[in-house]
Length: 310
Image 1 (cartoon, rainbow, N blue to C red):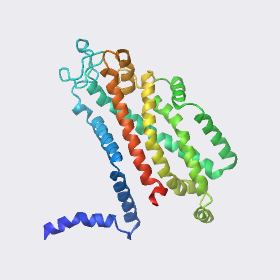
Image 2 (cartoon, rainbow, N blue to C red):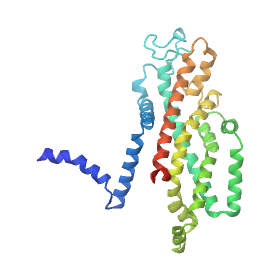
Image 3 (spheres, rainbow, N blue to C red):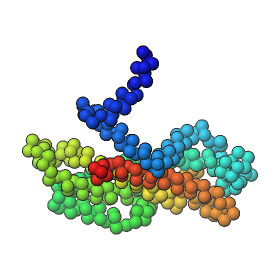
Image 4 (cartoon, rainbow, N blue to C red):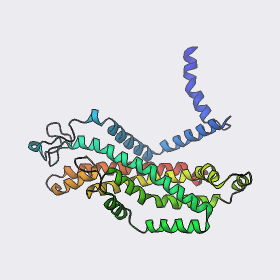
C-alpha cells in the first residue's frame, strides 16, 4: 500500500501542474512555469546551451576543487608548455601558470560581470523606458533623446571612454558596461508601456485612485518583464565580449587576475608558435557566448506571446 502511494506521487504532481482548470493563482503560476520549462527543454539546441552554461557555472563554483594548480603561481621553467604536459591539461602560459586552472577561476570573473550587468542595465532601462512611455510629452522627448545619444556610439567605444574616465578594474568595467547596455532595454520598455498605458484596466486602476508610481511598478513593469528577459539573455554574449574586449585592452580585470580577455591579450604575442595560450581562453568565451545565445532563442519561443498563441 505504501509503495503504491509513493509511485502515484509524481504522476499526481504532474497532473496538478498540467491541469486545465487550476484551483488557485499559485497553481496557475506553477503550471505556467512548468509548461514553459517543458517547452524550453524540448528544444535540443536550448538544452545544449543549458548544459554548457550549467557546466561552466559549476566549474566556476567548484574552481578550488577542480583546479590542478594555483592559478597565480609562476614557474618560468615550465613556461609555454603544450597541452597535456605533466598534468597541465591545457598547457602553460608565458609565465608557466596552468591555463586550465586559470580558466576555471576566470569563469568566476566572467559570470560575476555578467550577473552584475544583467541586474543593473535592465533595471535602469526599465525605469527610464516606462517613465518615458507612461508620462509622454517633454519627459518622453528628453529621455529618448538621451537614449539616442547613447545608442549613437558603439558599445565598446563608449565603455572604453567610461573606463578611461573611471579607471581600470572589474567594478568600473561593470559600471561602464551597464551604462552602455541600458538603452535597448529602455526602448523595449517604452514601446511596451505605450501599448499598455491606454488600456481599459489602466484607466480602471487610475479611477480607483492609484498614482503613477503604483501603476508603473505594479501593473506596467510585470507586463514588460518577459520582453526584457529575452533581450537580457540574448545580450549576455555581447556583455561577455565587451568585458573580454576591455580585459584584452588592459582596462578590465587587472593582472594577475585570470580574466579570459586578458589571457587572450597575453597569448596573442605567441599565437603562431604557441597557439593554445590564446586559443583556449577564446574557445571558453565562444562556448559561454554560444550557450547564452541558444538559451535566449529558446526563451524567446517560450515567452513570446505570438508563439504562445500558436
